[in-house]
Length: 252
Image (cartoon, rainbow, N blue to C red; front, side):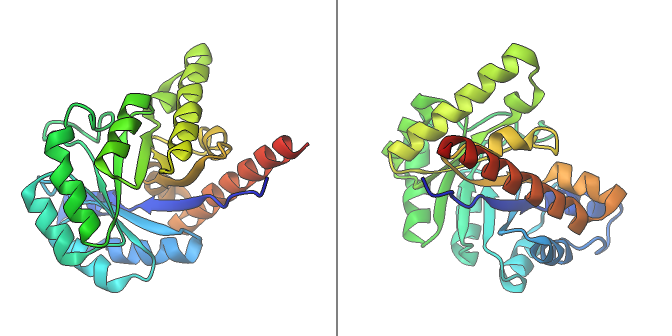
C-alpha cells in the first residue's frame, strides 16, 4: 500500500489573540502565515468568530490576498459568515460549532441534529467553489450526516483523545481510527485536529485514512520558547516519522 502524504494545516488564530490583548498590529497573523509556509506547512487555518475575539475581517481579507498557501476559513453556520466566505472564496471552508461563552471550540458540530439548518450553507459553499468540511465528533452517525449533506470533507475532533489517559485514551483512539476508515470508505476526505501536541500527534498521524491534521494553539504556544518555524518543523517531522513507521508496520 502506497504511503499517503499527511498534510499539516497551521491555525494562526492565537497570533491574533496575542495582538488583540494589547491592540495595534503586532504580532501580525499574515507574517505568521508566511513563517508557517517557510517551515513546511501545507495550509493555513483561521477561524473568524462571530465575536471577533481573535481573527478580524481585515485579517481574513489580508490572508486571502497575501499568502500563497491554501486558506481554510473556519466559520459558524450563519448568514454573516456565509457572506464573508463567498466574498473571499478561500480554498476551504470548515463549518464549526460556536458558542459565545466558550474559551475555544468545545466538541464537534451536531451535523445529524442540525441537518436542515446546515444544508443550505453546505450547498452554497460548495457552489462557491470551496472545499467544504464539517468539524465533527468521530462518530458514525455524524459522518453519515456529513455524507447526506454533501460535504466532501470531515474534520474529526481529537480533543477527547488528547485529554484521555490509559484505557480511555485507547478507546478514544479507536473511535478516531474507525471513524476515519468509515469516512474514507464513503469517499469522504478525512482530517483531524484539536488539542494535538508533540506528545499526542504520533498515534493520530499514523492513521492511514487521515489526509490532514490542523494544529494551532499548541504550535503558537511553543513558538514562545523556540520560535514558530522551529515548532512547526518539529511537528512536521513527528508527523512524517509516525506516518512512515505506521506504513512500515502495515507493509511488513
